[in-house]
Image (cartoon, rainbow, N blue to C red; front, side):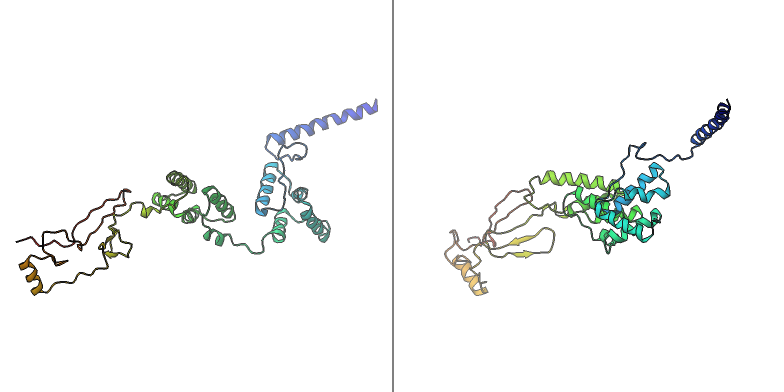
Amino acid sequence: MQEFRVAGQHGPRNHDYHQERYQNHRQGQPQYRKPTQFTKMEFPKYVGDDILTWLLKCERFFELDDTPEESKVKMASLHLDDKTFQWHRALERRLRNRLPSWDEYAVLFQDNFGPAFENPMSDLTHLRQIGSLIDYNAEFDFIAAKLDIAEYYLVGAYVSALKPELAGLVQMFNPKTLTEARQLARMQELIVDNLNPRGTAETLPPSTVYRSAVLTSKSPQADNSIGNTSKTLSLMPKNPNRIFKPLTPEEELEHRTKNLCFYCHAPFEHKCPQRQKFQLHYISSGLIEDASHNAMAEPEPK
């Protein structure tokens, strides 16, 4: 009977304990749950790859799981690979089983397994797109995650590192966010891929989309350019080996009097074999147009 009374005396205490725990839960006080029993999240495992990504994943897990500060380092050590865990054991012996805080542990971890020298800002400024846009975006995000700078500067660095055939259109729309810049780059990449599906020819930059009309000759000899404008004109005689010698005033008068050709000096009213011919090639629309004419008008017969 006495034992029953003693047990009954503990009844209200147990009731008060559970009531207090329930009230704490209703008030939003954190209640730690062991991840091995209650949570379905998997702790990220370190396999020797990107250190910064693994540390960020650990911190995200601790935040969602409400992990106590004194348990963070021990929990992370259980998910190290064998080689890295040996370093952790040596650290425990050196500190006599008094582990540092998680922030201190993260710094020690990066010092031992991170790169000897790392300058993400320099990596960002030297980054250039070489392959596909998807690969470039992944490399850009990897570097940008290590920097704490305004998005305005990230947008400028992103656009300037694109391929020339993509950067021109993206800059024209002056994007304000990375999302907008990536959408514009993706649209331009689709246009370029459709224009050049096989990749047999180099893609021209935007400044050379419109081709100029060019005048050339059939002769393989070097042409003589006239002017320095966007439309290049090149005139070349068909027979460049023959040099036309200007006539003196006396010779010109004699040719006019005797009705002689100014080129071959034969009697007029014939087809001169020495007259100069020019050819017009118009490549803007992919067509070739030939036009032959005399370089100098022959004198009319008297």
